Image (cartoon, rainbow, N blue to C red; front, side, top):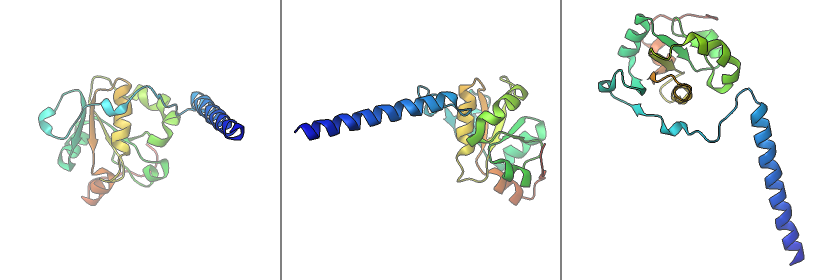
Length: 165
């Protein structure tokens, strides 16, 4: 019985130390995660009837094209290598998985008042919606997510830029 009790205490100690190390690492990471904020509470609308409303609205290719042509800020949530190979004209790189690297450079370029469109690689990619949720929590409330992403954009023969912006 004493061996079982010691094993349980050791397991609890290991879990406690692991949690403490995880929180310590997170606090020093440039990609900090706030464990007390839930991006799942961000409103997401899938129809254009909600245009202009606060939250995240999913847009299709036709509207994404109009948004780009109107000069709205466009964010590419993909990795740098994918961005350099080709991106929507005028798009700003803001890699969802390396937000800490881009945060200080990109956030000052964005307006809390205007719309911001976010996209990633293709329809099955969730990075654009995840980044939009993070931006919403940072105070950017008029967000558009182009779910078709770069694959649909380039597949439609629309203009593409290469290299860094």
